[in-house]
Length: 415
Image 1: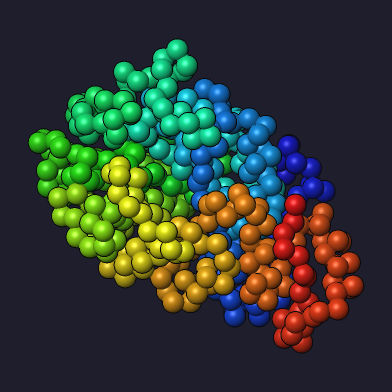
Image 2: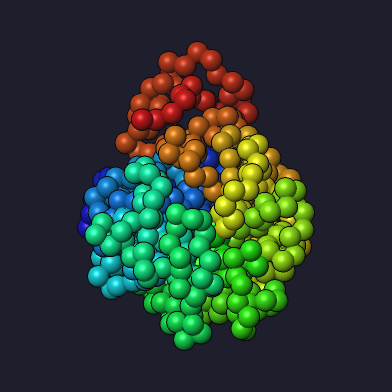
């Protein structure tokens, strides 16, 4: 047991978010385990990586203990720790998390131990922001951070020297030697993640950050072996994935997040052959599968400014469905999934193998427990809360279909 959480305070034996009645797991896919290699996620609803912009020199702190602990306590199968930069210049903001130094391992391990103590699985996303680096945290504004304020506007890099937007830094186009060095930086970060006890590693290759910007002809204007054709544009990403997979323990899963479309073509499933689209994404996912990637996390956008994004719930699910079908690989669905019933339908329709939610967990950290109620699943609550739940059950006069699925608790959330 971790030194930070005593055994009495742990929720490991039967994690929150686990069905009390095994029949519920047979009936509801969202609450079925998801096993990959040696890692079993106890349900199929997890917390997506979300930047908190609250680190100093890349170090996690007590805020992160509170933040990730409060999420893990309430039942997600996995909690992904936010994008952590593989080099200092790879941060989106000066306040981003980092894994470029061995000094980061102990702080990360504190968070990992808390997540594990509550029965969830700790994951982390390793990243490089590329030409979108050295910016302000979004809650402070949208501006380039100067060196005097901790930024590095003259050290921003990308595939080419074209800026993401007029108020972003003009990047330095990476040399081939610098590309090779960054491949090793991803490897080194993966090794540190393993030492900290991370069980699932995700490489961030989406949203216009470094690897994503190499994939797309909308941002990659190179004429060497890392630009031009599809095969050249994905070369850097494949080199990172192969090197990380070789260094990451065989028994632990490797995920990759990609943007499946950039909305230059207003049809999300339409073609953008000189940029990036779902067709190229499916081909890329097939290459990932050959290299041993276990899940492709299917997001979209973030690489081209000024395009119009869909706003309908579950608007990205079509991407996970297409990648899953065409590449024959497990996928995670993300994007405006805010109802447990919707998450369940995605799984029932085989549109994805796993569900990741982001902002819904910020709005309601008990999203897993509330989803169970919506699906009429009698769920395990944290030990510390279970007595109150049992008391509510004893006094609950509206008991929907208890004969089949056990009692239900009429709660909208847990504070």
